[in-house]
Length: 401
Image (cartoon, rainbow, N blue to C red; front, side):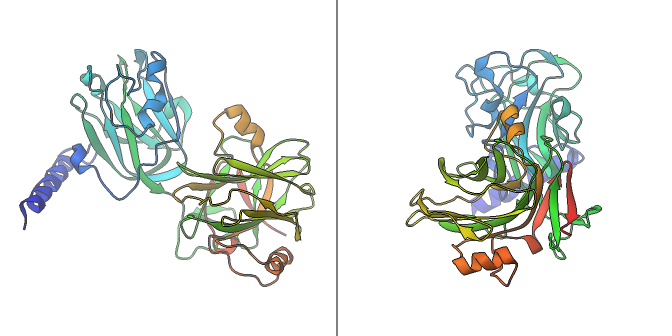
C-alpha cells in the first residue's frame, strides 16, 4: 500500500469517527474529503435571504461556484443583524441531498456561524426554516470549507439559519451535492408509489394542471442524458381560452443550456434553445385538443413544427448547437424565468398527455403515426407509457377517457 493510499484511509476513518460521535446529525469534513459522486446542483438556482446588509452581500454570492472567502472583496453574502437570520436556495425541483458543503467567511467574524442549522425540505415558507434538519454547525474556522452529510434527505429547498439569537449570517459558498428524486408514479391519481422496477408511467392517462399556482409542476426524468444534436418532441395538449397569453409547453434547463417550447401568442409558437429563438405561425391550441411536435437537427439547423400531423415550413435555426445534459425537464412551469410575475403569467393551465421524445428527427410518416396513435418508434428519451415523474402541487393524474 502506498503512503498516499494509507493517508486517504486514515482521513476517511477520521471522517467516519467524527460522524459517529455526532450521533449522525453533524458530519464534519475538511475540503480535501468533500464527498464525490453527486454533482453540485446549487449553482445557477434561485437564492434568497432574510435581509441584505448591503448590495455587496446579496444572496447569489453563495452559489456562484467560487470558494473565494473575502466579504470585503465581494465573495460572500451578508444579512443584517436579524433575529434568526436565514439564507435559502430553491433547487426548482426535489432532489436527494447527499451532502451540503459550506465555505465560511475568511476575512473576519468566523464564529458568527456557530450554531447554524442546515435544513432541507419542500416548504419554502419563512425561508425554509420549518423544514427538517440535516446538521448543526458546531464550529468552523476562518475561511474553512466543511462538508455536512445529509444521507439522501429529500427536498426542493436548502436553508442555512441561525436559530434563537440576533446575528449576522455570512456565507461564501454553499454547495448542494445531490441527484434528482424522480422515480415516483401515481396509482390512478390516488396515492404515490415509489417503484422504478414496476413503473407503469402514464399510459392511458393525462396530467391536468388545474390552476396557475406557482407551486404546481411536474418534473420528468429522461431515459438517457440529453447531449443532443437533433431531436423530435411530441405531445397532446388541451387548453381553454388563452387569449394572447404566452404559455410554456415544455421546459428543460441546465446550468449551461436550455430548451423551451412556448405558445407565444395566438397562432404563434416558439422554440428557445441555447439562448436563441425561432417562431412559427401555426393553428392555435384548442379546447378540443391539439397534437404538437417539433423537430430540430444541428447539422443543417433544419427545424419544423407539426400541428395535428401537418408540418409547417422548415426554418434554419441554431446550426451546430449541442443541447447539453445535466438539466431538469419540467411541465407546467418555465424554469428560465426568475420574476414571479412573469412566471405566473407563463404557467401552463390545461391537460398534457402522450409526450414522447426521440434523439433523432422522425420521418413524416412516423409523425403521422404518432398523431393517429398507430404503431410508431418508442420514445428513447421520454416515453409517456413508461415515464418516471414527480408531481408537485395541484396537478392531477386523470384518465384520458
